Amino acid sequence: MTIQTDALIIGAGPCGLFQIFELGLLGIRADIVDSLPAVGGQCTWLYPDKPIYDIPAVPVCTGQELIDALMKQIAPFNADFHLGEDVLEVRKQDDGFYVRTSLDKEFVARTVFIAGGVGSFQPRRLRLPGIDALEEKTVHYRVREPGRFKGAKLVILGGGDSALDWALALAPGAAELTLVHRSDQFRAAPATLAAYRELVAAGKAGLIEFGNAVEYAADGDRLQQVQIKQDDGTVHEIAADHLFAFFGMSPKLGPIAEWGLDMQRKMLTVDTATFQTSTPGIFAIGDICDYPGKKKLILSGFHEAALAAFAAKAFIEPGKKVHLQYTTTSPIMQKRLGVADGA
Image 1 (spheres, helix red, strand yellow):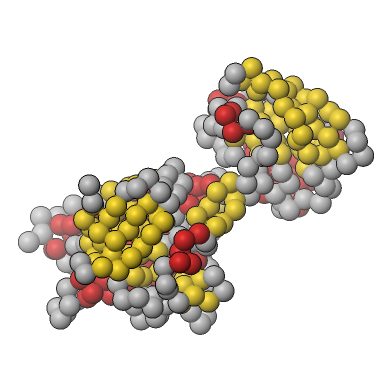
Image 2 (cartoon, rainbow, N blue to C red):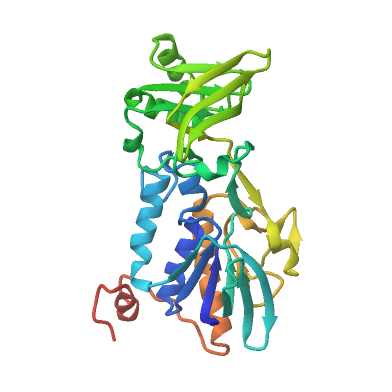
C-alpha cells in the first residue's frame, strides 16, 4: 500500500525532528524515515549523555534530553515514524516524488526533506564470527538502561569519548570492568582519561593498551569470556558478562548520491533562501547541505528547517501567499499546537 504524504523527511536527528515542528506550524503533516531503530541520530547514538551548551535559551542539556524535548515539542503534529529502514530510491513523477525504502515501503510525497546528516549512521561492528547473534543481548554498541549492568563483569573496547565516559560511569557499579584500546593514544578528553587512570591506579578498573578482541566464548546468548591479544603477542582471557564496542559510527552517504541532486564535497548544494536542492520540491537541511558560510551546528539546522518549511508551503500551494505568523499571537498556530481554540 502506497503512503501518500505532503512531506517526507529523511533523517530523524534533531534537525529532522524540528522540521516536523516547522511544517506542522504551517499545517503540513509529515512522515519521517530513519535507518536507525530509534530517533535522535548522532545525539542518541554518539553522545546521549554528553552535555550540549549551544542550544538557544537552554544553558545545558544532554543529547538525549534534547531529543526528548524535541519529541515533546512535535507531539501535537502526529507525524508518522518509519524507523529501521533506509531510503533507497527517490524519483520524480507527475504527482510528486516516489520514495521506496529498504523494507519495500512506498511513498508518494509532494515534498521531500533530506535531513540525513552526513548519511545513514551505522555502528562500526566487531568482526568476530557469529558475534552478531549476541548484539543487544550481551554485546553492545551503545548503552541503554545503564542500571542493568550493575554487578556484572564488563569489557569495553575503544579509546574515544564514548568508551572512556561509559567506563567511568559503569565502573563504580560493576563487579569488574576492563577497558581495552588498540594503542596508548586516546581520543577522549584528557580530564576523562586522567580520571579513568586514577581508577586503574586504585585497583577499581582495568586497562589493556595495544590490545584487540580476537576471540570470545558464549553459552547461547550469554557471553562468558573475551580473549584480548596485545601487539607483543600477550593473550588475556577476561571473564565477561557484557562486551561494549565503541569504535564510532560509520556514515554512509549511500543512495543519496544516485538521486540526481547537485552535490559538492559529498554534500547537497542548496539555495539559502529556500534550502531547496537542484530539484524543485526536494529540500536539504542540517549537515547534509552545503552553501557558502555553512556551519555544521544543530542551531544552524533549526534555522534551515524554518526557511525550508516556508518554501515547501509555497511549493505545495503555488500562487498562494505564505503569511508569517507568530505562535504568541496566531490563533491558527495555537490551535495546531493544541494550546488554544483557534479559528
